[in-house]
Image (cartoon, rainbow, N blue to C red; front, side):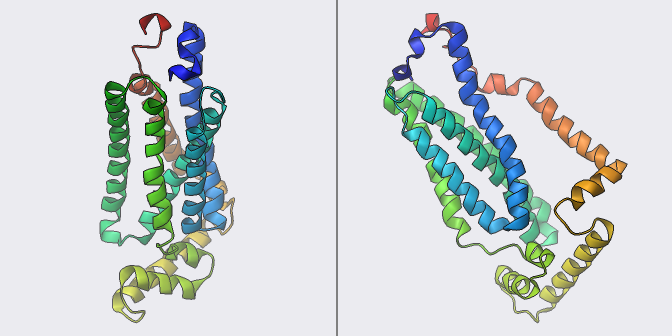
Length: 265
């Protein structure tokens, strides 16, 4: 990215610039996960995936518009939007998978999603490495990885038009007829099939128990979690897991570059 004047920057300025480019994406993902809860609660899983896929595509498109004359502003803004899109979609997708999966293979399917997530990150690093080793340091070297982002984002957006809304979410919004219709489409079975009848009864039971124990409403899960020490302990363990995972320094290793100092370039 020599066109942005990285060679002319001092060591501290270059480090800060690279840190901002990387961390703005993480910050966007942090807030995207919160936005996802609001959207998924009120709009549903399908529409939320479409919305945040578009947000990501907008962010990736902004990055493609950056050049030496415009500066890094479009890249920084695009990274924020891309982070929001990824943070939201990475929260909504496993929820949607778990809600439409048959109970017998639910954990397996969510696990496959997580494996795909990590494999995709690995592929991304190898794409960057391959381009850095094969192309000279010019506009094409950094624009190609940004352009590649549009491929999975476009596939997700396209696929979101064809999926059906989560029957569980529809049932929670008291749209029972639509929920049963979507469940029949997902399972490819008629409404009077014993499997569908049992699954609908199971959904009814789970939602009734949830309404009795937690209640219905946007803030009810938070209030219920605050009252239950066991839930708070599990939430604490989950948060600490992610905190120490990042605190281990793995991101520093992932993003390490031996060319951080202009003296090494």
